[in-house]
Image 1: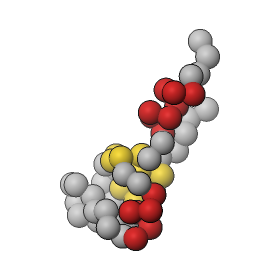
Image 2: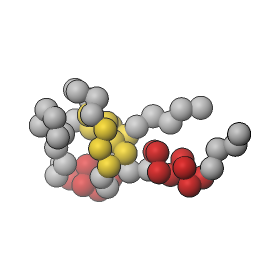
Image 3: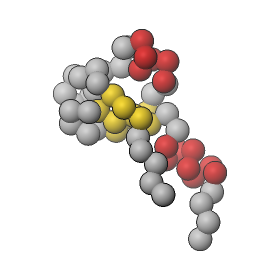
Length: 54
């Protein structure tokens, strides 16, 4: 089964992961860069983009 561009966009676009507690959240990259977004669980500002699987 092939991968659909729409499905890949839903799974990986605008998804960030907390570096401390590994919680996933959807937000904009600009808000991450400004430091406006905090983790829901631990309150950290350390977020990274989710890694795409092969």
